[in-house]
Amino acid sequence: MTPSILVVDDSMVVRQQVRRTLAAAGFGVLEAADGVQALEKLKETPMVSLVVSDVNMPRMGGLELLEHMRERGFLPEMPVLMLTTEADVALVKRAKELGAKGWMVKPLKAELLVATVIKLTTTKAA
Image (tube, rainbow, N blue to C red; front, side):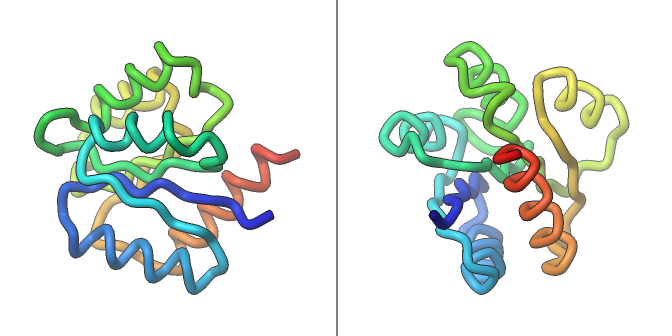
């Protein structure tokens, strides 16, 4: 079964870039423009293997999304990778406390993203 990845970012360009990168590596990709849409997608699509999320988004950002995912029982079973322009150590620490399994700083490095997604999805399956 092909793992499905939910990409959450308010930038359509970033979502498309991540989608193309992950689809080329053989992953199924769903998209959401913010945390509110992401929670709706997670409820509708229980077979998501991993979430790749931005931190700063309108309506609901990535850290708030992590909090809601934990409250709804998605964490710690579902790995979350934060992909953001933020590199603040306090934000990284907070995200990890909330359950994020990884943190990548934009701009997107395709090879690193694919390697990290493979690691997180295979670690989950093991």
